Amino acid sequence: MRNPMVSAVRRGLVCLLSCAALSAVLPAAAAAPRVREQPRIPFTQRYYAVQQGGMARAANAAITCRQSADAERSATLPCLSARAGGSGAGATANHGYEMFYTDVDDDPNTFNSSRAELVLPKDAQVTYARLYWGGNLRVSEQKPHKDNGRVLVAEPGGAYKEVRADSVIGHRTADGADAFQASADLTELVRDSGPGMYTVGQINVAMGRTGVGAWGGWTLVVAYAKKGAPLRHLALWDGFETLTADSGSLRVDLGRKRVPVGGSGRLGMVAYDGDRGITGDSLTFEPHTGRRAVPLSDSGNSADDVLNSSITDSGKARIRREPAHTNTLGYDSDVFDLRTALVGGADDMGVRVDTARDFVWLGALFLEADAR
Image 1 (cartoon, one colour):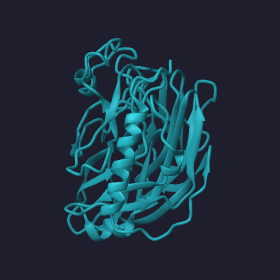
Image 2: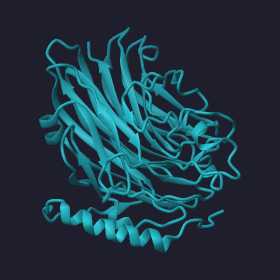
Image 3: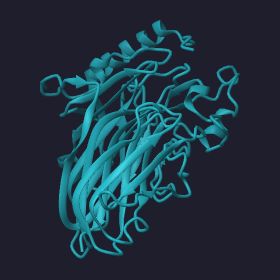
């Protein structure tokens, strides 16, 4: 199932030359201590504020299928159809295709890059911003984990800047994959740069084709304040948890945050290697401890296939991306409407994630909910 199909020697030589050239054109980065890695990071609250404002995010995948008849010889759907969101039981999962990097910039020194638009209200003031990136290091090639904690980021109209992880990196080898997630505080950069198209490059993901599949991507989560906006709970949690059919439910405690009866809100989720068409995964929201949980789904994420390789807001592709594939082939960054779940208000909230057939990694959750 893990039969290499691409010359690792040739790719290694190209990477060696391109990485050397890239280091020559980028400004020297200050020496930073190596961030340690661990196979599991329990979810904890990263940021919390009660303020007039909201949450926003930009996201995109770093890798997609390659349109090649030879590479698709056993795929159920052609690559272009898969990217467009074609469906079928497991038909459009990443392990069914030869996967290759997306690279939208004009820089020959980057091997992957993608863009997405961060949309903020007029006069919004950024109070916190964090970038998450991750993927699979082992497909037909093996990427070195020493590069997990480094990416390149270009703000709207700007040039690439090296960004290094500032927290423990989740990194686990399991089920034939070599998965990781890293993150860094980008508050100063996003506060100074504002809304627009952000480009993220050089995410350490592997390409090729195996029974596990190639996958990876990034999400920029932003909290903002705005005069005249509703008073809201704004919160962000992150970790690195592996979910399998045998592991049971993963419950993330969101803590005591009172939401009034009839309040509104949104819940965001970042996850890796959820496959479109492989059903059995679900997301539920618990407004009150020990009381009825509310299943979350929408037009873009069915109740039994929530982890379906999509980047959506309330079921729609609302943010501008380059490339803008409907099916990201292994990367989820979705925002769900919580109005139905918050009809009776909320206090001690929680989120539960289940999977019956897939093998997935959960990386981040974020919440925007009325405070009064």
